[in-house]
Every structure is written in structure tokens, then in C-alpha cells.
Image (cartoon, rainbow, N blue to C red):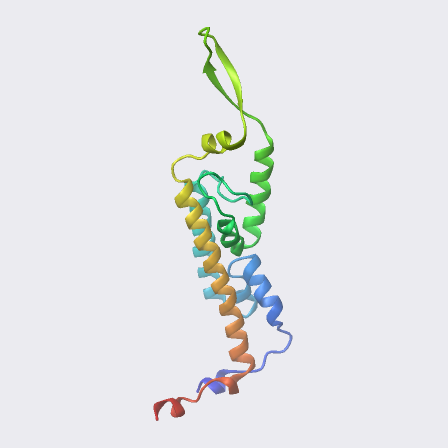
Length: 172
């Protein structure tokens, strides 16, 4: 029965489907004609990514190590979400170039503005929720990569129905 439904696709490119799935969550499934699955993946993966961003006050996606997260592996996982990661990376890199000031009282009792830079600045900007937000955005990226693999699997099974094991052979 599964072989009757499997048809050869014309005009569908597996590489394009996988790239679309990576760039925009659910886009690869939409390209393959699986609308419901595409909408579910878009909402869940992008929702998880945005929830993680909100937890970290939209500061957890950037390509540099931090004092709290000593590895760039987090960014590699986050990059699995595709375009949203690129947008937030560019936004956070631009924000990193701006100066941050705080006030403190000097020895004479006067209040003065002090520029915060380097590692102290990162600690100043990282509020509670940064780590869990980073975790959620990274997991969203990894889930999107799994969805991209699923797009290729769907394409391959439809394109090569003869490669599927026969149900009768598996029972013996």
C-alpha cells in the first residue's frame, strides 16, 4: 500500500528542500507539500527559539565565548535555526560595539560614570535566565537540524520507494 502512494517527484530538489528546512523552520516540509507538519515545526521550533531569546533578554545568540559559556559550541547548535540566528547574531554584534556605562561613587563621595568593557561588561549584561535561554535556543537549532534530516528522509523514501524494506520480509 505504501508503494502505491509513493510517486516519483518531478521538479523537486532534495538539496533545495534541505536548505529551505535549515534556513526557515518548516520551509522544507512546506516545499515537499506537507503543510500541517510545516506549520507545526515553524511554530514549535521558532517559538522555542524566541522563548529562549526572551529568557536571555535577546542577548544569548552571538559568535563569541562568554565568561559563563566558555564554548562556541552553543552557537553552532543555535545556527541550526538558520536565518533567525543570523538576524540575532548581527543585532547582538552591533549591540556589542556600543558603550555601556554605569555609575559608581568614588573616594570623594561623588557619583561618576564609568565605562564597562570586556568581561565585566558581559557579566553586567547577563541577567538571570541567560543560561537557560542559551540552552533553549541551542535545542531549537538542534531540533531544526533534525527536521532538515527528516526532509531528506521524506524525499528519499518518496523518490526511491523500492529501497523500503518489504513488510513480508520483516515478518519471517
